[in-house]
Length: 420
View 1 (spheres, rainbow, N blue to C red):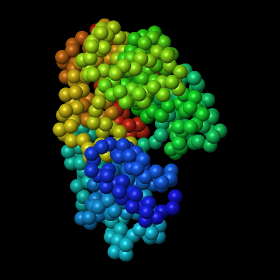
View 2: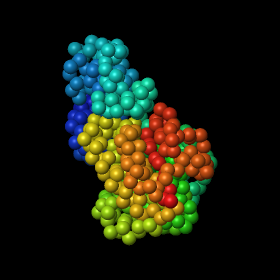
View 3: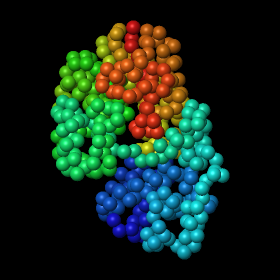
């Protein structure tokens, strides 16, 4: 990649579009790159990484911008103060008057900034996290502001983790076994894998380690009837199918046709024959009601604020609001209640989110349990230990709580419940 004024102008234009916060950041960048096909792989990488660095550290970078937080200044501050570029490297695009400002921006220690600015969080979100995590809030924020590593999940129907690690090593891709998931592998860097033989053959899938642990909490068995109630593009569906050894019946429900369409090529690679993708209109669809009381296991990975995934989706902290979270909480309660009707006596219901907020997690399950006395919580640590997941003790009570600073994964909440 050659750093030129033209390349910087592309980063500036892309960032201006991102800062409108009208659409998810990855969709905005995908659209920008489709419109500018002349940008090569390295150029796109520069634009994406620098723009995401700005989204992660928007408040502290704005504080360094001396009252002019334009896309141009935010990008220069990100390159100079965060990514370690020097003035010589920035020379193709900097103006003479900007060198003194950049030096002052880098020297700013930020002790006088409000805590929310230091943590690069909107005030409302900082206040909620502070109320929940207290003295750990700053460490949590710093972990959320670092880019996520690339995790893989091995397909146990087709290979073993040892075989995949050996193949990656042979291809000079640095990797190690994940700390908790028995099927997880963490890569040191982020190579393009879409054409790698392991990926093409369905031996591996990209999936965060925390997301993998949700499948082990559901712990489906061979021959059971299981539903992934909010399947999305199906990462957890594929794991559940593999844990069932491609036997029984596994429904992948979702309201979005496009997300289920994205599942189909992954399904074809996986070798699974027990998965049935079903588009539904809502949680009360007739296709759902027909299965009332018939399922052994149901996973509800509910639509949520996604604030546990800020390492990957830093725009979410600027796009969510107290109002949007309140709307999500109402939706989560309705979806959980509808999914619970599918579970047969003795069956297991797992409620999960990739949010860190108590109202989307403990609040939703407490309200559900109060209204459904036939469901009782199960201890996550015991279930996971039986599945070969060692070393995770829930911080409090029965629920599984994962965070980037404590576990190196995205932030997740999950509670398993049994219908008595």
